[in-house]
Length: 399
Length: 133
Image (cartoon, rainbow over all chains, first blue to last red; front, side):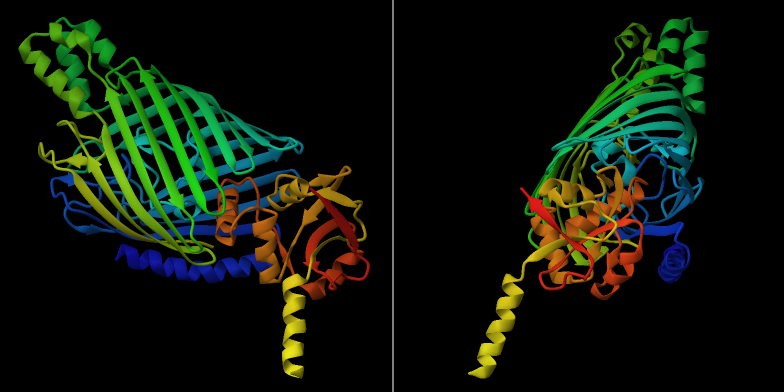
């Protein structure tokens, strides 16, 4: 029913956008959509696209992980002032909002090189952060999850300062950001949005250097993170009551400093592409240290782009002091730590076919391996260690 | 024989017609390097000799494809993906496309426009831009 609703909205938008474009020069209306079907053969693990959703595929065909529609309105208010609003409607949410406001900001173009943005903005953490949900704009159906899901937010409220320099043979784009964000994560299989995720004083810098077909990128961010749910609160209280206040405080993610470093590169000519990204997240809490990478290559053969991707993430959230706890406390503490581990590996094969201008059809097979009894980004119902074999078909469009 | 000759002439014209780069009357753009041209058409460059320059695509799919491949080093699909990335990041908007017959309408404009046309289709008051490596 929801898919039908999205399709009818989409059809009416194609005609509306054409009228807008014709009548209002200062206003630009655009959008993107993905209509997708995903099948995960493992009935014990819910394959989902991010930590904000509970809907996914577990032994059935689901539209939820990848289907969405996004609308964007750009208004030129003055020669140097513009405003943008972008929202996304997806079928994956449960007990959280279906409609997500991703952008709502005002941009001041100070001169050819400098601009300043204020409002709700996209955090430029990754190479594809700005087009996270615009699947048409990248080769795959979804961005490699090992790298793109450990940070469960993509937008923030705050400011962004941009510097763009066009040299003799290169372009340099640098952004400096400051802001904060709050989200509710789904961290248990029944779909309750029960973990509050709050990032304060998010600040950092990202820089992209492009020269010809080569792009290299680096970014660094810091934030004060707070992550709470009823289960964790009970655990900390239990530790404190039993005299392990230091351990409780160390594990508790309450205004704890988190550092994020990313590196990325991309090479793309008219017949070949090679992409790679690496992320390192460090925190002094039960989250521990997370590192992840992906490498993807594809051959561009006219309208067909077959591709292959290898991705891996690991999370070191062992906490040596838990060995000093008595058995009755050690078990729940270590269970919580291992249960929240995101580590997984995946191997992906797929092909993109450009149907016509502004539309592409993609098919993708992912083999996802989880090597311990932890939860990963997907929802595990039992201690099932089988791989997930996920096949997805998607139609991407921009308008 | 005559038909064969005519077809040959037409094919020769199509195959060997050169792409000419032109600037509208209000421009002060006499020459550009291929890299500068690429920068204008990817939205990185907006000025030349301190004057704003608006790059336009021409409504000629064959020529547009050739320009995209040879100057921008992209396939038409890659170019569409590129502009999608720019549009949804709020950084740049895709270039406008103009018909051959509308080139003359821009002659009165105070703004500087540049585009590419097939040899022999240069609009009357537009000047030719020399392209260097």
